[in-house]
Image: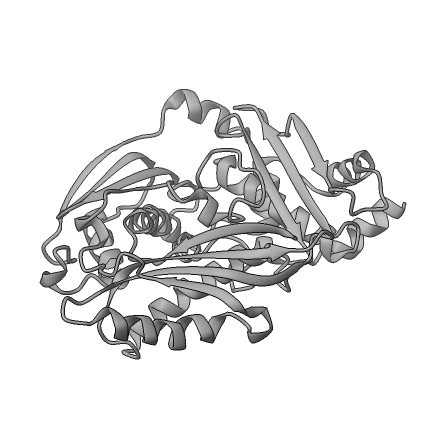
Length: 380
């Protein structure tokens, strides 16, 4: 008997994800006109209300209520009968400038806070990501696609997925043993129709046939009804889906979320860099699976520590890999920002379907352009 691992994802209409999208949309609005802007924005949403608070230091002007409404509209809340829509939602803001005590350390190139960040990569999928989280993301992307394109016209914006994968004793994924998919829907649709449509048009469309065993269980809207959803049913807050954002629980997490933070905050930029390093290590064949930790002190530019764990999948010593990382990469906040070109309005797209495993324009931390050079340094 193998081992089983489960990961989840959520749609862009999920309350927590609405908050992540708002926070990152504000960040993008600042970076569009002011690359030196400092942003640390938190969002909360509940029935009929979005509150945006935090620190914002910028030369430009951002119409935050308009940003909020556009995010809600794009998430799909366009009809009053949903109980939450972009036209009628109340928006409250409470914004102040970044603390001068923090700015004093950041302005000279130091880290914006202390903290520890993890990056992870594995060769079990083409994306170099764990299979459960990749499939979970693909399911909610497809759920949104069939809603937005009218393929399943009775769906509403909120939704969640969960995928359990069985691994053999070598750590190789063997099959999907269960899928949980909850989709918000209109009042009049019968659950039998919804379950048939979701199974055929979403689950079977995404889960490869070779991974679907006869015993794969599908739990579609397990309670039988999901009409009330989004902020009407559940309060949302920025940063509550950090496992959805990263590796689905497969790797450790430093604790800091990403959304709403400009790249001087190492919570975000160093986590991206750690993923970039980990992915290049796996792509180079240095290890089949690796976790990289970077740790920082507030106001200090270089990391205070680098940790590498290869889980017995490398012929190289982990200290040797860590030394190569330190030699090859500029791991200061400024060095990371420059290497990954992070002062661009690219963050709104990262706020749903995960920050990693997406080889899309702007996701520079997913490139593997340093794999060859890294291997040469280690072989040195």
